[in-house]
Image (cartoon, rainbow, N blue to C red; front, side, top):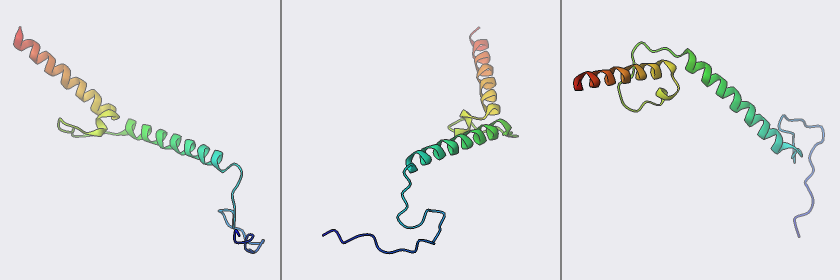
Amino acid sequence: MGGGGKIFYPKQVWSPAGGWYCQPANWKANTAIMGLVLTGIVGLTWNLSAEREYRDKMPAPGFFPSRYWSRQIREYDQKMERKAAKKAESLFS
């Protein structure tokens, strides 16, 4: 029972994936390392993109995910909040 051994395959065949029955001992560690490397590259690229982002027109009030990472939009929102607070203060004084 069990179907016998592995079937014959040519030994001279090479493939980037490792060929037939390839299961390197450290594949989990290699996958984790590459995952971390790719996460780091994506994070650095995202950060560079967010720093260089420029908008001529600011988005309307509401939910826009880029409000959380775009420096220009955050500064604009803080400026508008200070302006609104100053206006409310002048109304009550």
